[in-house]
Image (cartoon, helix red, strand yellow):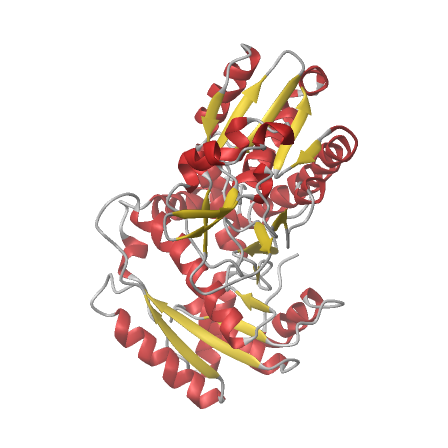
Length: 413
């Protein structure tokens, strides 16, 4: 349902947080109309302490000035504001995709440092409709056409969208009434960007009766269908999928009997769960994997190794994906592993790798060699101290920690 007017928008925010009020809330503010309106509406709402953040990608000459404008607005509202500067663009790959992923990562780190329970984003119903159309152009399935979720967890931080029912023009009207100026990103008029082309196409679709509200409404219906499918996949995972040493083991026969959509959900969920990835693999790569599984072949995808036998399908971490990953023994490794033992500053966690040959009892674990190669081991420099998953414990243990079980991960969005 579309909402407009400052009071109605504030009531909509209150309904969004009903029953799940955060203790402290962050708000991402770029300097554009949507995020600035969200900042003011959350200030009017006045239910929880606020902190604001601006990520300056440094990709446009005016970005620093826009960040300074946001800082001034926040000062006037007595809201703490931080600017995070991104200097990681190397000129390669998809700029917008890298910027988006890095932005979420930086904001998640910021939220943890500030002790925030969630970060609010200024996405609107217009953004929702644009997102659905872009995904339609990529032949997305039920999940993609469900649009953006009201809230999502990325990098361990909850990001929420309390204005998904609001139109962009209504937010701008609210800012005009407050006499608050906003910045228009010049790229929003550059047809080289897909979202700009879709935005212009939406204007034509409105004339044909396929407007923003109807597209977003269809996304809501598809989200209900997605949730029902997710529950079916989760039921299968609870009853039929085993988790052993961080691996997931499927009965191939039972998996093959599942409808194609459920089978894909299980495979995508397993790849994400084992690799701790935020995003699923590409559709083409997933189709190739399904074909390989059908032929009974082993494969690698998404940082995982997929091993087939006559009766099982086992998904484990790919050793190559973690061969350069190192960290202290008292912190998580590869996101999912925690080690317990006599921690010391000169020790580190790295993948066991070919040092598996130095673990005399590894065969007694009855775990595949591929699983053990990618398992966490304790090192002092180049000396192997312990490899608990491979049976070379020496006072150490390892377990998958601080993560929901696989079945639960299939229904979390």
